[in-house]
Each structure stands twice: as structure tokens, then as C-alpha cells.
Amino acid sequence: MTLTLTHYLVLSAILFVIGITGVIRRKNLLMLFFATEIMLNAANVAFVAISTFIGDFGGQMFALFIMAVAASEVAVGLGLLILIYKKYGTLDLDSLSTLRG
Amino acid sequence: MEAIAFYIFGALITGLFLVTVISKNILYSMSALAAGMVLISGLFFVLGADFLGAVQLVVYSGAVMGLYAFGMMFFDATRDVKEKNPKATQIFLLSGLSAVVLVIIFAAPQLGEHISPIVTGIDGANNPQNIGAVLFTKYLIPFEVAAVMLLVAMIAGIVLASKKMEVSLSEAASDDLLGDDQTHEIKEQK
Image 1 (cartoon, rainbow over the protein chains, first blue to last red):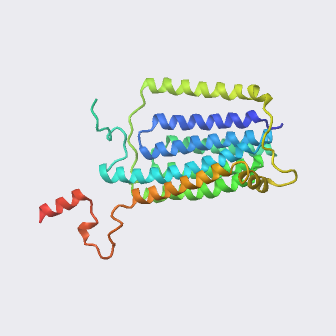
Image 2: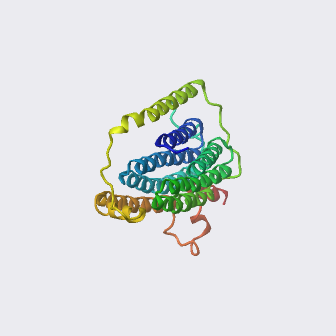
Image 3: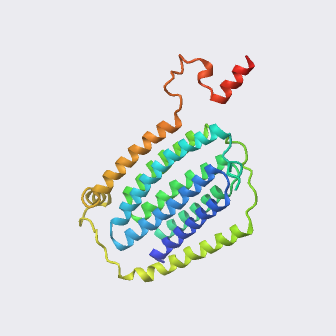
């Protein structure tokens, strides 16, 4: 049996849904970062699969730039997380809500 | 052969990422995420994108997970994460979003039948050579912008994570290194 583009797209969709599940369900800021990484990786899989099956290198370029964005996001985000943890002593989103609206 | 590799990699990646999302322990979650990243690079190799597979290994499994492991030193990683149960509205939102994503994914190949390749690369060159040729011709300006963005992120990371770096650790008094609140407490105790 041969693999088609749909196989890879379905796998990418499953991974993306897992990432969305994490973002909606988790309340810990670090877990939200992990879920974001999963979603970025799912998009990368879809980009590379389409790029290979169509024969266009644009998709792989986009995947490369997504990796650059993810790396810088992690650098800045972890700095912010460390600051939040130093200031409040927790990464729980429910206990971080300071505005009572 | 390709199909076997795809199914093994796909099942393992899905399982590991599910562990990442569901696990209550941050350490287990991070380890599962790192393993999933390595297996995704295997998926890239199966697809013939050798360069991106190598970059995935170096950047995600190496740099990003290394940064996370480094950041874990600041957090209490062994404690379990306490979380409330999700509400019903969240579950409805979640299933709705999943359905939309699945419909789009299944409709995409039919819609994309008329797409023709634009950037085809050089005949006879292998994947990294083609990536280099495309990256330094058509995508040169995004490449430079990405370089500036990485520089900005590096400076931001240094500034954010390293407060009180202007004080030398060996010469500083002990209360210079503590936060402001703790300093006040120590002075009050004195």
C-alpha cells in the first residue's frame, strides 16, 4: 500500500488537535508552552508533506522559518516564565489572575 | 517499507504527545515531548526532507528541549500539577474545533488538485543542495529577517532571565542576590 498526502495530513490534524486539547485543558503555563510546541510541529509535518508530494520547496522553507520562530519564542517565553515564577512563586493560571472583574 | 515506517512513527508520536498533554508531572511531560520531537524528525527523513530532519533534531530536540530542561531548574519539577476539571463549555469548544480542523484537512486534497509547483529546485541536486539554492535566492530576505528576529530573541532572553547580572556573584553581599521582598524581611529581622 502506498502512502498518499492524505495520510500525512490526517496525522498532522491529529497532532494539532492534541495540541489544541493541551492549550484548552491545561492550567499550567509550562504545559501551555509544550502544547504550543506540539501545534507548531503538527504544522511543520503538514508543510513538509505537501512540499514533498507537490515537489515545491516553499513548504520546507516555511517549516524552516517556523522552527526559527519556535526557537525565539521559547527563549523569550522562558525568560518571562522565570520572571513570573520569581514574582508570584507559581505558574498556575488560576492563581495568577490578579484582576477581579 | 515507507508505510511501515510512517505507521510506526505516527503511532509513537501520537502516543508520546498524548502523554505530554495528559501527564500531571512536568518532567514526564517534557521527556515525552523530547522523544516525540526526535520521532518527528524520523517522519521528515521518510518524506525525503533530509535537511529539515537534521534541523529538527538539532533545533527542537537539542536547543529547545535543552532550554526547557534548563528552565526546569527554576521551577519545582517533581511536584504534581494540580488542575481543576474542564467545564462542559470547554469540551464543546474543543470538539467543535477538532471537527473543523478535520473537515478542512479532508477537504484540502480535493481543493489542492490544481496546485502546480513554483519553486522546483535544481534537477539532479540532493535535498540540502536544493534547500540552500532556494534559501539564498528566493527566500533571502525572510532569512535575514529571521536572523534579526533570533538576535532580538537572544537579547530579550538574556535581559529577562538574568536580573542582577551586573552584580558579580563572588563580590556581592548575600542580600544583594535576594529579591527585594526577601531583603526587606531580612532587614526587618535585624
